Amino acid sequence: MTSSLGNLRDLYQQVILERYKKPRHRGKADPVSRYQKGHNPSCGDTIELTLRLNQAGDRIEEVKFEGEGCAIAMASADLMAEALTGRNVDEALQMVQRFQDMMKGGVEFPSEFRKLNVMQGVSQFPVRIKCATLTWHTLKAALEAASSEKLEEFVSNE
Ligand code: ZN
Image (cartoon, rainbow, N blue to C red; front, side, top):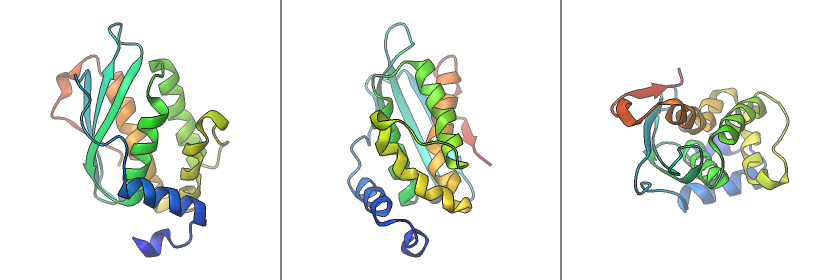
């Protein structure tokens, strides 16, 4: 782990490791409106995302995650949870696209979401991009599911 993070710019590395060690959004949403598991076979990261939506189902009130994996995957989930709390579902889906674009060298997030830009450092390491995008991929699946009926189904980003 240390060796693959060794080349990241210091700030990126610091934020990622800090989030990995002291996540702020680990746990389970209460109550759970959406639940989705995600898996990144290339690294072994797994994530269990739970969302609490408003009554109308168009706004995210709470995002929590559980899971095991590398620092990049876990830090990305924690940063995503923070950025998406209080967002409309449509806005969240646009952010999924934007994050994926950023990891392919696209533009950064505006200052309101600048914390997410620390993940851009990962885009220099193609093998780790799936670690960073796993949580976003899983979120998209959770939001697009009509209900929590797909309870036991994993999404994989392979
Ligand atoms: Zn990973």
